[in-house]
Image (tube, rainbow, N blue to C red; front, side, top):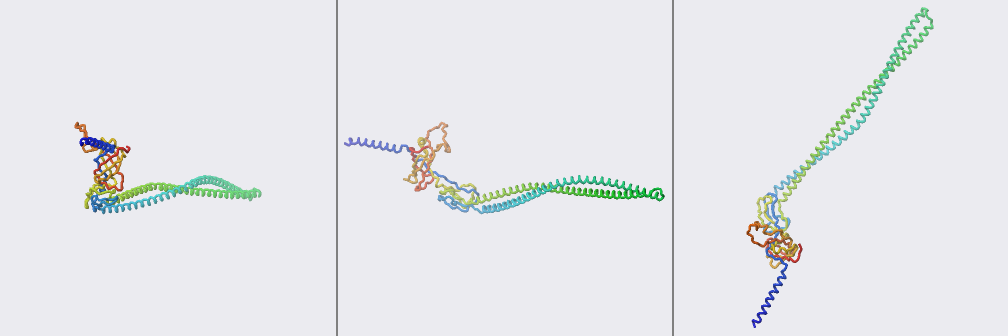
Length: 426
């Protein structure tokens, strides 16, 4: 009886085992599972960017901090004095800029005014000189002609006066001789009357010739006086030319001041450059003063704390790190025989040993381009002849889906990752 019941029981057990195996295979088909996985995250190293002595440490190891929280402080007195000195230098540089700008403005005004006055003087003097020279030439020609005419009339009048005088003397002698002859009865009284009339006529001619000579001489004197006036005009022209030369000299002098203007411009540019350099120095000093207070770069937890009060730090000397709370992911090392089915975006279930019974969700973010062995300190060299085939592991980065109710994940926790290769696209 027992033997008869044993056979069906064995068959039932075998069928149950096969069914369970089939169901297990069907449930896990397309799933890539590995327990070679760890949580990873970014560690922000914290160091001082300036040298100094630590005067205060505000955090402890593993303390949670927020962005901008003060981690530690460096003695700031020297840096505060540097800021004050730089600001004083900046004020002096600004004063030099103002002085250079005022000097440039004054020089430009002086140059513009002097140039305008000189140009106006030249423009006024040159037309007047041309007109005066033309008038002098015309007056000189006219005066010369008048003098020549007056001299000619004087010469003619002198000749006429000499002739009238000679005729007067001749008529006078004739009258005296005829009077003597009349007394002797040698001539008639009528001859005396005729000679007397000729004598009076000759006297009148002498007077007329003398008056003409006097008038001609007066005209000569007037013409020569006009020549003196021409000489005065010529002297005035010479004075005008001298004024023009002085105006042109002033114009050249005013134009020469343009070089001073350019020099003032260069001086202003140098002063402004020094002011800009002083402003940069102030900014650098203020930044260094601000760097005496070292703050947390992001939310996270303090780790690797080594800084102590009184410690003298050098720039970029690491003294602690901040594990960034919002930068946690999982790196799963998948066998090369299974990596071919993994796709970017595939859903992932993550079980962390630190939280038994808790499942985290995520997705494949990237697949490593090289195996872990290739980036090892001593990578394998299969060309030596000692070749033993070992299944290689490919790192897969998994992004964890945000969950406000999820507990915080630390860096380096062991995890079991299950990748569902039945979904997702590359």
